[in-house]
Length: 425
Ligand SMILES: [Zn+2]
Image 1 (cartoon, protein in one colour):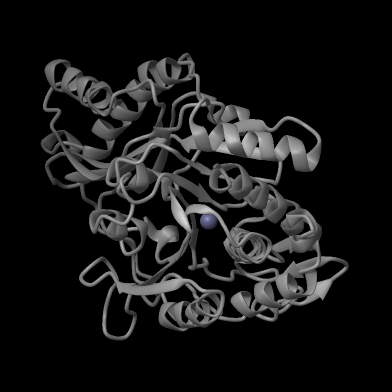
Image 2 (cartoon, helix red, strand yellow):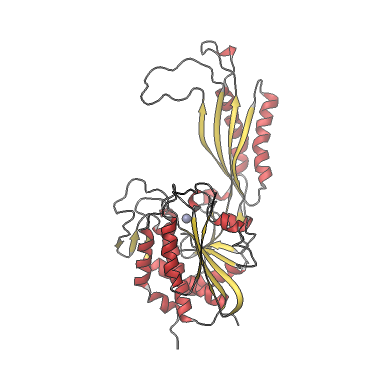
């Protein structure tokens, strides 16, 4: 009798550790987006030896793609013995900058007390490694299965995913006719299912004024005072309205369960002095003031209303405040995504978590976006979640780590998911 898949995964502990360490030691920093080719070739070699068909795909012409920093992606596919669903594990291969405060080598991948340390350990090379071990153990345990298993390693998630999942989705790789279930092993903790994320709308608002001598401001028109009126209006009207909104999205942390807006930056008047110039400023009335807003919104809020709420307040000022004028430039917009709780991948992973961990999963949604947006909006594939080992709060921090036991448990859940979806007769 074949050993159970769960035992087969546990027996691969040393392999899992070595694989995770190898992945962390390839410093795929983004920006600039380096070593994508190297990590794709590493994954190609590994997965080829386990019977996967490999495609390496460069996202030519996407933001950041260049001769020096090409945006390479890998898709590995292993066909089953008969027709059925394809289960796809998608991990981003890029990691964010190291930052200060490390006590271990960020690309050394040291194993200390059952934790592997390094940039990208939890976000999300540990999740990638867990999905590979789950798939390989599944293939060794069962030689007859339906459908297909896919594993992808994609670029640029940390900078919007345009050279990674967005590009692949545009090329049809996430067409629901080709792929039926997608699991993104982001570090959401091994007993939580992430159903989706809020939307984001980024814009620059500029108020206009007229330059004049600072001793006679009445001869000009102060753009900073106009911006003060904008901020006052936001404080009086927009922030209370956003805070009062409720959502069905189980966003964590709790504070992100309503709409939010960050004022990302503000600048008005003359440019700041160069650091090597210590003279005094000239006396001028500022003729321009700009802010950048970062508005995160809920699945219940249409993007048009999100935009309209802000422009409505600005138009209101234009109608009531003398000499007020503004310009709004949209910088980017990402729609929210939330997979139905009854979707097949959600129900299957939930049952797998109960089986492996002996408790019901917690359902969450992410305050910020991740690659699910592209699979949903461009790929038109709704059966997608984030599920993976690792502590979310460690992502992007110094001394980021992933627990080996957590990776084993995560791989067991992924393995049990494959059993349910691919062993159907
Ligand atoms: Zn991530």
